[in-house]
Image (cartoon, rainbow, N blue to C red; front, side, top):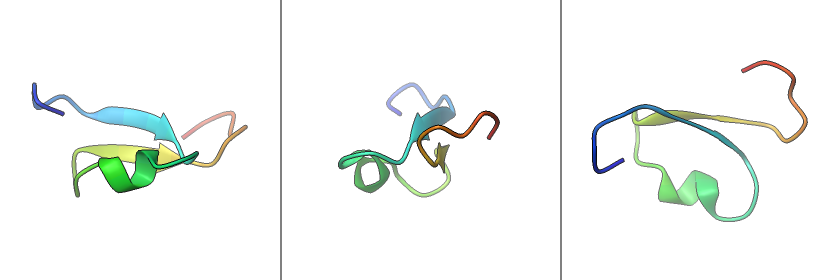
Length: 34
């Protein structure tokens, strides 16, 4: 996030809350494709 790069992460734990709006995409765990 500090480098301004997009992030792809799974929606587990507190990860969705840590991502700022517009900096990445959150996908459900076990999702084969975003």
